[in-house]
Image (cartoon, rainbow, N blue to C red; front, top):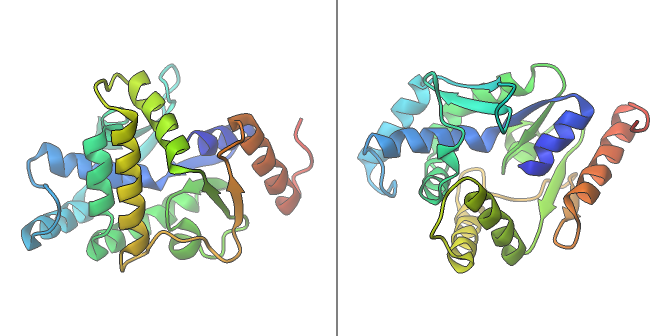
Length: 221
């Protein structure tokens, strides 16, 4: 997410965090007491109903960090959707076929609003299979856990250990890659970037250079 936001800023593109859409929906369901693990028909049906009626939008709000904010039914939920409980809920919510179908049109609408950068686990395979440039970012689960823990602590989420965060990441990866609907996988024409030993600046610069070459935008200033 951090790389995508920074790349969008450098290129002057609109950033669409599709994962935040599922997180916002999961947060809504959890806050209403309508979601636990998604194993019951009732919970899946409620998720679908909310997916059809919820109003989700991104807004650029200067003075806040991050500036790119997501609103759910008019309420800014940017900070709340990064909590570990919501992360687990988002993975389960996004596995409901009807929910994905309900949000697919919204994702494509947001992605067609000029030059955009979208992030999500099935963007290059399902949402925009004909995207001009595709990247598949990877890193060891331990390194990803360290990065996530730093983000959680910066956001005020205390009392979470590195081992717990790593276990959550590995469980989510397994669930996302083994699910029947839109599983996590690398698109055949995606450029894979292993970020484990790279700094954020190195990753962003590498991606920026390729985008500019593919789209004929010239070199970075």
